[in-house]
Image 1 (cartoon, rainbow, N blue to C red):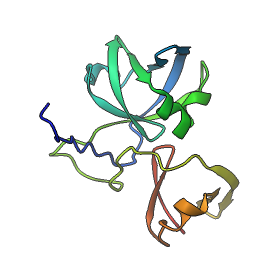
Image 2: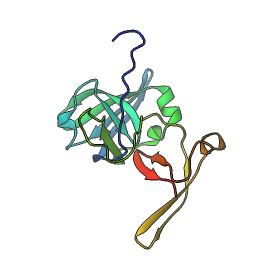
Image 3: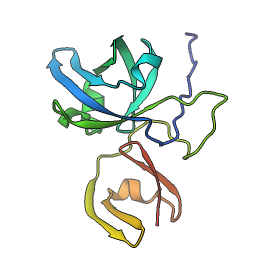
Image 4: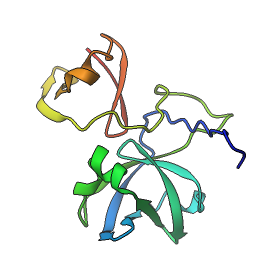
Length: 157
């Protein structure tokens, strides 16, 4: 990779598969995360990018339908991935290919904050999700704009 090169991986915020956490193990050099992903794992290889709950991660290895990731302290501190446990479900999406349709919105997989769900309710055929955001993040959220929550593309009401 050339110095200064940036691979601008993009995602759509449309979940390809709901994977299952098989193991999370913390070590001295980071945390290992193993996820069962029967549909997308066979299309992935070491070095590929995938979002896990909206956070862009690099596949460190693949064994069968299992994807392995190495999480650094910064990733644990800035995401909800450090709270994952065996059996938890996670939203997964592979990086967007150059010739693929864009159905959601552009998502980079960079997490701005961890938030709290204040309310979740059904109104007619719609679902409303109310999220508490830190003020340093909320000022950048536009009415009727796009936002990704756990890797899911949503429109601000």
